[in-house]
Image (cartoon, rainbow, N blue to C red; front, side):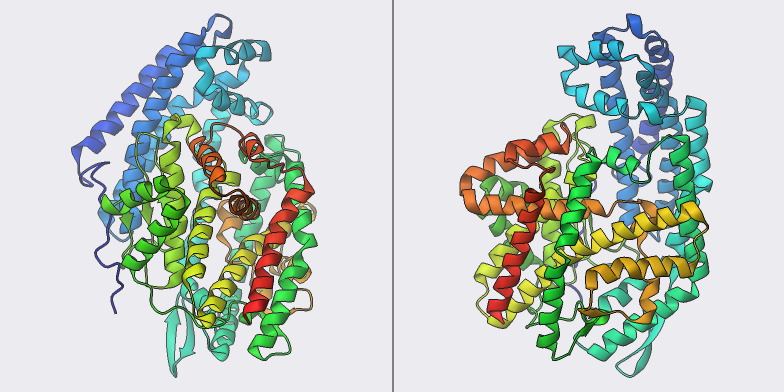
Length: 594
Ligand SMILES: [Zn+2]
């Protein structure tokens, strides 16, 4: 049956009108000409920092910003067209062309940052202290942190180009292998082929034997690719270690901490506090075993549905639910979110060839965001839409920032989205009168939070041990499986049975391949939102302006400075414990319901 979101497609005319819109070529050509002129004019200025004035630097920055913005418009358009229909050869061509042309233009502009890094501190400080450069100081200061880790310009260019056939190629190989995987298993008496994401969603099926079969089939299929998947991962870890040496990073997490603008010590504390609370999840799993009538749950019971799932959830209903939940927080939230629906900034229908999952793209402060999702009439699709609209609101509210201050680092990038989900969840729970539906709702939310907090912590610990082991010798599938099980044992304890095949559980996680040490940002985002949401409940309406200011600031200050006015101290163990108090509270609510 067709989903209720059929026909809900986005309108990209604010960017360009078609893949063959001549404005695309004109923009690319114009960007290139401007980048060449920029390089000619600004390089010599940057090579004479003693005589460089604040006005010169300001002019250079505004021109640079404007080139990046124009380029971003083309890149976003090509990326969005491709995401909406990946199988269309016209879209594939455009995406490739734009990617290649953009790299060339970026390489022409690369010198600017590199020259800025060469400035001696007193010269840089003189410019950073100038009032006229005020809105660029965060960006310029942030760049300076990369001083000890940057190579010479020709080397950086070579790294950029060689990455396409090195690290990036291994990433593409991983994507191609995992997205082409087909698993065959018995469903309703018939042998059926399923892809990876369909296999993972079978783990939510009410039928226990089907869940078990799905998990066994999944890991058997992955084990058949085991040699090549571990070769890819091993190679990428070695590449990372090599670049750490060349760029003089003290440990494998250092570059991620730097781009997250976060003090490593705060992450260390957060992860330790998370481990202190693994028992919360274990208690819940024991409870779940009782509800399922089992002595102990197996891994494939982890996401078994409890209670009674809400019946089909139509797109129009989701829209109304979200707008009302946003309205009760602040009318401005509703107003902004309503624009996404009214102006067709959302592509929601399920189509062949469309990218899976969901995302929100916020190209630049000059443009509004766009949302892609695959709305299939489940409650979780409504939650996903709420999540992406949260990103969308963030992208709209921070449009008062300039291009360089627009994006937030990963650590705070998930704040608005997860907060929006909480708003909608709370609203939905308050309206729900059927106790079985309430059980389903709360259990779903708790399991979702466990997956974001505890599981992502486990993933990060696994990565740490894999990197440490790679310092000694090449990683085999056996070694990776052993490290994976060890990291998971700490989490599941004796509350969950891990089937033997689970030693392949590491092998399909895209973050390990595409963005190493990304996963702790999820822990950060979820715990932060739990604490912020508690503040909202305690403080009521007086919380709203502080929260709006946080979103409006975009990436103009570091996460720590952004959160300080909210009374958040990320170096304080007690702050992180607050998030777990909230989780414990939700478990108590759940116990009362059952
Ligand atoms: Zn998100």
